[in-house]
Image (cartoon, rainbow, N blue to C red; front, top):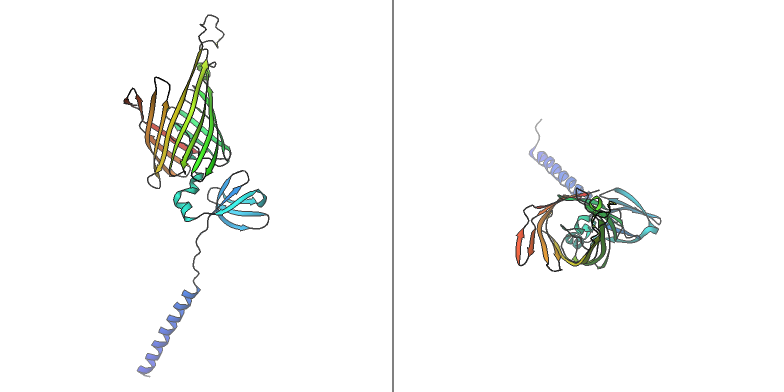
Length: 305
């Protein structure tokens, strides 16, 4: 039985029309993806949590964080909830959680760490560990690989606004087993302009050391010579992002009592992972108008604990 051309044409038109209707229906049923909204929740104690709000009611907020997963936060413990803007993401505001940004090569700055943050900084000359007791209060310890000296640290930080930060701190220690009787202290204040991505910093302090070398072993025949020295110190530091993972780090240490001298350290920091960073630089000593390079490079490893 032959099929007429008109019938074939009708069948073809029917299938083409059906296909177009199906495609149109699929497009209509597609759900436009909503942009992911990221929030920062600040607790009453100053701790910040960044993530996506899964749900909330009158009692608590369920937040999905990248670091620790889902977290229930009671409403009575929350000071504020703020949605992050595009400018926050571009300026690195959420990188305030980046605890490594509070350090340069030798010195620190006024940027705060979040409560519970802890990191270890390993230099070729020794370790340095810092822990945030609360948002704005950090304690720590540093030494050389020979445990001489042993220094304890404490620092409190506060912010005037998003770009101006201040810190007050002190370093206090002893020569330990080499001479327990010789002790020193360095109170200081610091001011930082910028954020954890790009900042400049100035620090001023006053170093003091005193002791009776050789008189702590009970030897009656040692000479009774005491030492007591003090001097003002100054430091300039900076951190500028070059790429997503690479930043320029500048640091300095200026001894202002005559004969004065300064140590200048420019370098590079590479942050390949959120909980790891490596930095290297080359230091020089400036004295009497001459710059003398230090032959050994400055190498540091940051590790989040």
